[in-house]
Amino acid sequence: HRLKMHAILSSPVVAHRSTARRGSIPPRRAHPRASVAAAASSKPAVVVLPGLGNCTEDYDAFAAELESRGFSATVATVGRPDWLRNAAGLTQLAYWQGTLEPRPTVDWYLSRIADAVTEAKAKSGSDRVALVAHSAGGWMSRVYMQDFGVDDIRCVVTLGSPLNAVPKDVPGVVDQTRGILTYVEANCAMPNELGVPVTCLAGRWLEGVEEFGGAGDVAGF
Picture 1 (cartoon, one colour):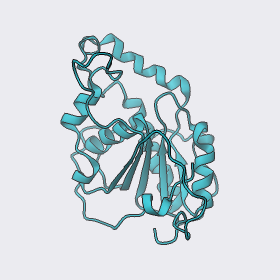
Picture 2 (cartoon, rainbow, N blue to C red; picture 1 turned 180 degrees about the horizontal axis):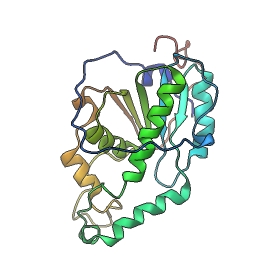
Picture 3 (cartoon, rainbow, N blue to C red; picture 1 turned 135 degrees about the horizontal axis):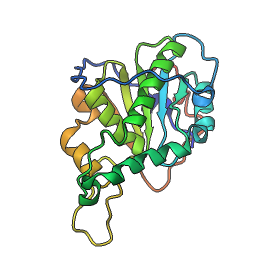
Picture 4 (tube, one colour; picture 1 turned 90 degrees about the vertical axis):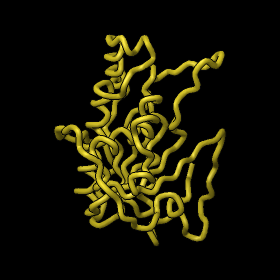
């Protein structure tokens, strides 16, 4: 769906603090499908973070729409088989106890975020990027910013992302993250607490308008 990109991605520049970087993510060569090519310099950079089970190509149309509206769009490189890496958590007792922590299980995804941010900055000429995080990409962006800092992040937009811990002892409710969301809520600050503007979108259905006085374009970003 076409969203009002100016309203969502535009935000005033605010002072922000960096979090302590508790680890390092090695660079990874970008996949040719990881972005929509040929962005002009000095365009506002947007990094799209795929949701659980999705791959880079699922966001091609969305990235192309962003490009058509004046943004430089880069989609983090994720293949569907990559999600099988999360099965590494099965080997940990914490998984079965429901107390699993995000790292090192999702370190592979954090690496893809770092690669996409580096690529987006180089391609666009911008010094910071807007993160547009779908589904699980939302809480993983929180882990990324908590552990690796926010110096490169202009703002965050989450699309249908679970950001709160899963209720316990509720019949029929199962924590598919096996405790990771509980950890994230307790240990990872929300973007606005780190000085990064955040917009969260969720609902059963959202249909934007094609045009709204140019609000969906890059002007005024």
